[in-house]
Image 1 (tube, rainbow, N blue to C red):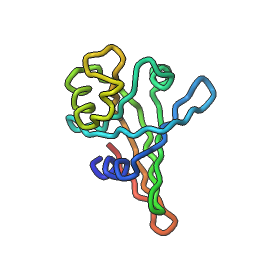
Image 2: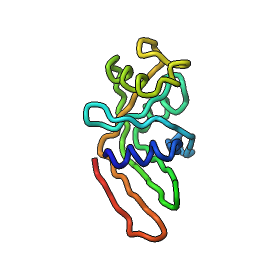
Image 3: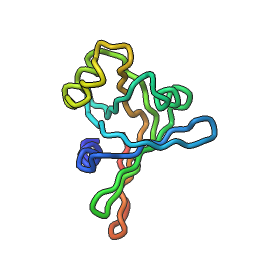
Length: 130
């Protein structure tokens, strides 16, 4: 999982795919932190992306850097605990302009039953489950 997080952090931006009914939706994200042995991302409860995750928690993300890419698929589980939100915001202080661990909008989500696949055109794929 640490290798997955490092790759996502090195990329800076990854793209998260959710489903809006039968329509896939993809958008850029930047948060990827490990807290209590789980890989977390962050968003706002008011955003469509969170509503889509509530409806269908199966997601996939992808990122690319230096001829290598990753796909991570799994379920996202909301964690509304102050401690989890504070950890995310402390590690990403630029988010504090929009979010606070004590507000009613901030939400962090962790991956459950996730599979990460690292790929490139020159190496065989590598899969990590967490």
